[in-house]
Image (spheres, rainbow, N blue to C red):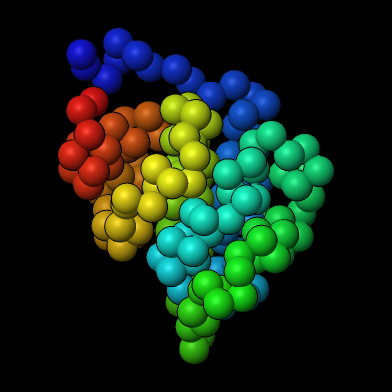
Length: 151
């Protein structure tokens, strides 16, 4: 099966959820100065991440507020590592990573446990080659190259 056989685009409603999540990831990176890959890894075990697209009271908030809600749901001993100073040039990467992860989660009805298998550093380094692709195509490449899933 090729990737166009099962292609489903995000609805306008789903797209607003994806954008809210991506904005929150960027905010966590900029405002809280967290290492973005570590932040994702710890976030995948949070309740807020698992239920994000179903929680209207969460994703309709501002980006900084959403980032805070996600952090509140991560046990204190698992909080992400703070960076000394964030590299502002990585803010678009943080946004893109959040965008791809939430789109993937919504399109394929995934839970946080699925993403724990994935090394976020791989996604970080793939930004340059994947960010110009459609989200659906980027997800398929990531699954094939980084997770060895059948696409």
